Image 1 (tube, helix red, strand yellow):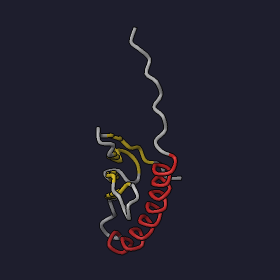
Image 2 (tube, rainbow, N blue to C red):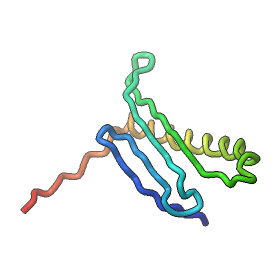
Image 3 (cartoon, one colour):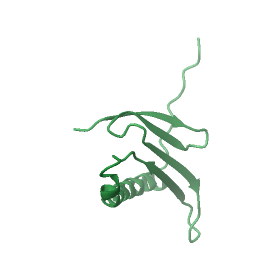
Image 4 (tube, rainbow, N blue to C red):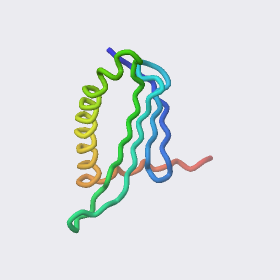
Length: 101
């Protein structure tokens, strides 16, 4: 079992930055950017994903192509699921905020 601890920042524009602060991928980061984009007259969302992972110096160059393929495959599958949720189901309704007493 592998665990990482991430710090997450969500910007006002909805973009997400995750930084691994503890665990196997410490120092690695994930960045997600979302932009409305129409294609063939259909409204949609373009998602840009940047992943940075630390690799061991000795075996890093050897495993990089396989790791790159694995990460790309998994991230594309997850992004397509998120894209469907956003475009077909919409954003979930925000919970009402309680007024300060």
